[in-house]
Length: 290
Image (tube, rainbow, N blue to C red; front, side):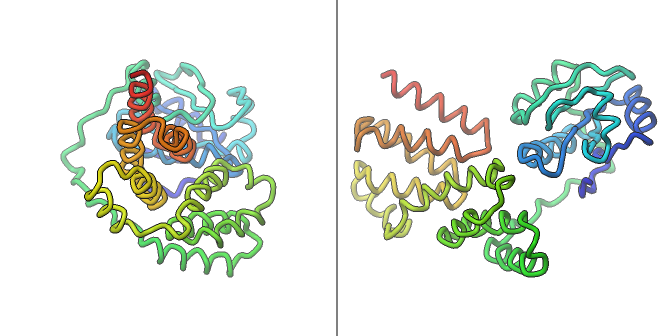
């Protein structure tokens, strides 16, 4: 069940589908998100779809269908894998697309079926951006959840991810090692493993300020650039980290057996932002061709 308060996102069931999806589509296009609680890519796609629903200001609405609870609907749409997105417009199903598409491709898909962002209505006052979560407070909150519901392994995965945010790589790795098979292969767990590889590089590494000072004194200090890029990546500033690796590539693409190129490729495996990845992948390709 969705926990969003957006007026453009709702849960659809077999009992409500005719009214909330088919009839609604006569007035407003409806995207139907077929998902499941056990599906890792669904956890990536869902928030992106909800963000788009808000960004488009009602140009379409998003109906979420839990395939485990609504097997009749899943069968009617011949859903063979999740996530799958179906587009319903003017009472007709225009098609269904499987997989967790990145935001850029989703926007292009909407454009192809004639859905463009609408202007916000006058009564939609701009909302203040939510304050970013304090990573240390998030760790404390998740520790309590693990204590309260120790049998829920999802909480342990969430805690491992939060621990990585504060640099507690050893504890995060222990939690990841104990995950059951179904969660160990979750996209988030796989990316966390890749992130651990970066974290391991920071053992005994100087703090960011020291690395920044070293680069200011000698812009060709590629070891400092590499460690600073890794620090920024692990801390969540992906763009800054990738920029350091690109700068390494510009200065010496052969340094340490192609370390800059390898670091960029490893970073692309960790990140979720497809637009950011595409931008830096193009820069990397252009530099390697020079």
